[in-house]
Image 1 (tube, rainbow, N blue to C red):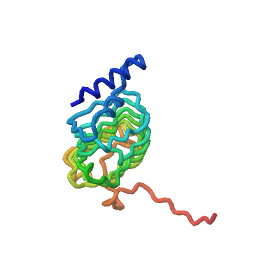
Image 2 (tube, rainbow, N blue to C red):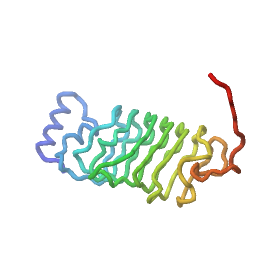
Image 3 (cartoon, helix red, strand yellow):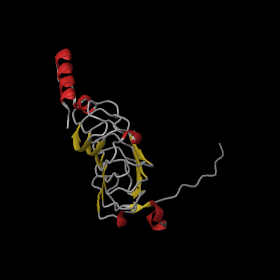
Length: 200
């Protein structure tokens, strides 16, 4: 909840600037111990990943902004669902999430410019469709759903085992073949080998 004092502050900001504060500006007026089930920061012209680490937000929508860098240490406490679709992200790495922000279960990073995804923490669902992926890898623990469709540069040889995942969507990748886990690849999956003895 927002206190009366905070409401007055927002009214004063609106009067001085002549316009209403953005959704991020409003969020930053909340007390740091505020607990929020869902907060919508979509379409708020945000260019840098905001530091929300002092807040507790279970589901956060940052879609349709201009964010080009993901900063894992800025995630809210208790975060479970994160929507970063339709931004300007180029890479997406989560090697570790420290408590109390280590509850992340679902990530939507679709419709960005991401070339590489690497997630080392257990999540349930990731949507990385409509990007520029050339590589993707993540922890197989708990994963149930993966969407890597519409990544025309992504090979069918991937850094995750599709047979350990309930649902894998991979329409319109580089060669539209059956996905193969690079850790189990054998000679039957090799089209050709280049051998060179040239010395530079």
